[in-house]
Length: 432
Image (spheres, helix red, strand yellow):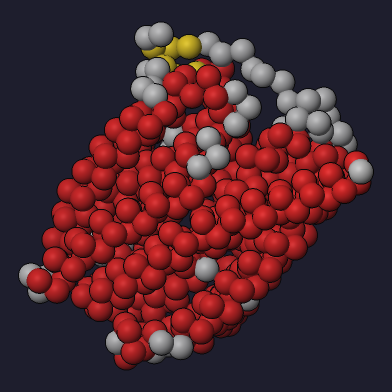
């Protein structure tokens, strides 16, 4: 009798999980299609050379998004998934941390763009683009994670749809209705749209889950930095190729490669949906130690790997239409995209092993691996582009992600079982 009951419960759990995945995938797939349209409008509207210059800025944005906020969104997920009464405290901490670190990220990003990468865009517009893109991406992603912390993964998917729809409407008005083509003017439009969307998302989360308690949890900064280093290093690995290429190629070649990279990023969304479903559960299992967290990682790894394979195939097929959609100047992006797509299954496996470490309180190990691997990525990618040009860079990109997946899984198996994750006492700055 008990065995039948357990079997029934397992079937119900599997059915619920499948329904959750489908409900989450629907808005995400919609967002993928809309983002592809927006990307096509932007690339065609700006032209390959202006899009190449914008690509270098976007590569910096992708890293800056993960460095601001001092890991506040991840700490919110960790804490609220265990105790929802802590939402106001950690939501306020997250917003305060974003407000403090965003100007710093813009300043550092501007230095990298102008001083190291020599991006051919005026300094004021570089700073404005970084503020708009980093700010909106961080606030929207944090709003999604707030919803994930409460188990509302499908709702979080609709936040992504709203973000993409808003950008698509701006692109339609700018490039199609008004027929504008100038990159500087495009940046101004993005800045206005970003400010409006950031305000809306801050209000939405407070309206749905409660007003923030405006505090800065000083005692959590060290933990937050571990999340920050981990996410920032991952972003560096995914965008360092365009930064490296910007130093060794002209704007035209960078525009073609940048188009391929944007198509590749579409393949990351299904994996992100899967990880957001599984991510809070790693903390639940990880409270019993690394062994329990590792077992859960092994359980979900096939689903993640399969998602990576399907994403790679979808990206490769989408690449075939790039010249038709983007224009013949982007024809070279077809082979580039297909080559880069081979990295997606390995990226998927990295999530499972890395989240196993994070869930068990071994974020320091994960951060160390990502920190050192970001440096290693740089050497591998530079060697690849110097030895083989763009094809060499593609091969180095795939190889680096394969090696990183192996290192993370090795760490997950080699780490010893620690004590349950301790709650850290917080020193609070601000009003209570």
